[in-house]
Length: 103
Image (cartoon, rainbow, N blue to C red; front, top):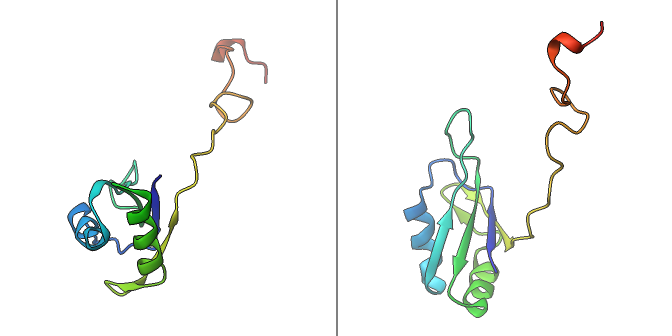
């Protein structure tokens, strides 16, 4: 199981998040995604803890809690949805060469 954390302050580091969640058990992993283009934090993250009981305690304690000036949204992470592969009829897809296109 994994925990989703939304509305994270942009200045929060993995160490900051680990410290907060460590109050409820052993933190196995923290992931804070960044924007591909700018490299800046995206304002959300994921935490994995050692047991379901620890994760449940952290969710109950931290959901809605104010931290670094923001109200956190903390809940069980949902499985990642599969997205269609690029090139399925959208922009830039297809297997025709530019010279084969008709305008």
